[in-house]
Length: 82
Image (cartoon, rainbow, N blue to C red; front, side, top):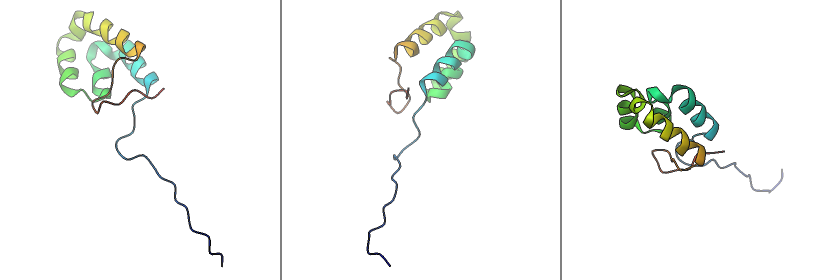
């Protein structure tokens, strides 16, 4: 037998980080339904965006730009993983 200590892999604690590519694709194709906000964990904003059809397109366009520039964070305050 060897007396070497066993090593264990460590995983980050907490929910997995949201992906930038997934967020931008959801925003581009389903953003008018608020799916991008649901994905990011902003449930109330997702519902509001859903019932207003993306703020008649304005909110959808603003969110698309914000996600593309990396300004938007998820509900836990984490940046999107690239």
